[in-house]
Length: 293
Ligand SMILES: O=C(O)C(=O)C[C@]1(C(=O)O)C=C[C@@H](O)C=C1
Image (tube, rainbow, N blue to C red):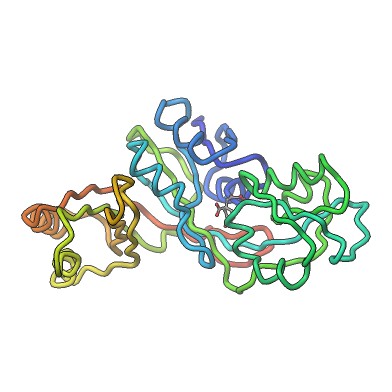
């Protein structure tokens, strides 16, 4: 039995993703993304599951930055999960949204519901928490005219009721989660249908000069390698110093990728493969999307 760590506590979306991905393992929850990734790095757990990107709010910068700057852990799998954000309140709350004094949640969850908060809960102060599950736990502990944004499992876990369903501002809300692992021993997962294989790399340009990014991209384009994401992040060394995170829509191979690497190195770029991995679609209890075959 392996140890699987995740951004907890129970009732987070990461917790849902973990249970859709793994069965028959020991599950350990961590309060923050860095705590979970550090535990994998130190070998306290075998794999860690952390959020990577949301369709409404974009990249979870804390995860990407921590993977680049603080730990050396390959991404071994990726899974996307439909996200349904609900407004959760104590059972004693009378249902009048204008009375909500504070809304607790993770910053990514709050960002997915800005319009709802702005138009429906005008009086509410936003209080950020380390996760949606933690927000639900706090709302239960504090009580009163306050609410959490989170999922139905969190409401059940922490004794709250769902006052409004699906309060995220745009439909088709999904979050991608990364599974990271230190050792190379394969960890048994549920039998899921693989929808794709991707390779994620980081590229640091030697200096800022005209056409530098164009040259980097052309190493992929003339090889007909499709990129599904490119994003710049600060190197944290000075204003204007950025690196690029690039998702390539194919597995690492022995011909095309070494060719790209050699070409980029000749340009003076630093390149690191962050993982080459299968991608899965997961389903929440309430969604009917395909998962297991
Ligand atoms: O707080 C949670 O429930 C998490 O699992 C974190 C997280 C995130 O960081 O994006 C995951 C999915 C949702 O997009 C909102 C929050």
